[in-house]
View 1 (tube, rainbow, N blue to C red):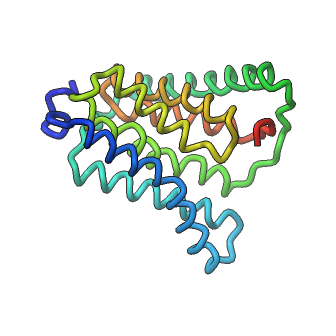
View 2: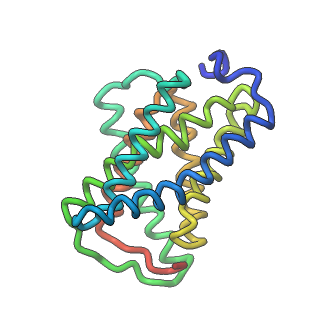
Amino acid sequence: MFAGSTSATGVGWVGVSLVCCVLLLLNPVGWLISKQVAKQIPQPHGADLIYAFGMTVSGLSVVSLFEVPIGSNPSPTALIAAVAIGCGLYIVDHLLWQWWTQSPIRAQPVTTTEYVVALCVIPGEECWYRAVPMVLIGFLGATGYGIFSAIIFGVAHVHNGPHEVIIKTWNGLLYAAAFVLTGSLFVPVALHCGYNLTSLNSDRIAGH
């Protein structure tokens, strides 16, 4: 479905390196800018809100500018199922985390702002970490694309500790597979929504 797009052909290792550099710098640069802007806004989680908004606006802009195919909107039933699967994925990760680290996952209160941040950042992350690497699929192939996208997504969460990098790489592989198999970016967005909403009530404390 994607290999025939004009943006996906003729891309070599230079393209891979360029996309890799952009995505690796995206998170630290985005946070640095967000924190500087947030100093002017007396709002709890101000940097988080600015980061989420910036990720989504920039991600949608890049996808639109380079005409990266994101597919059509699937049926409501498919999206609801994807959200439910995303919730289940977090539960599996939750159990694996406890087994792997032998550390507790503590409950935490959640504010409305945190819910907003958790949802608003998703379209941007999916555009940047799933859609943008799709321009490489003609060179890397579907499997290579999935691995590349997953690793970059995992490394982007290195600030949460080494355990979280591995878990996020695993999550990223599933999100990328969902994108390739369904041909729609809306499916990994729905998976990601279910995952983030389920994860808000707990805090992984190992590996920080």
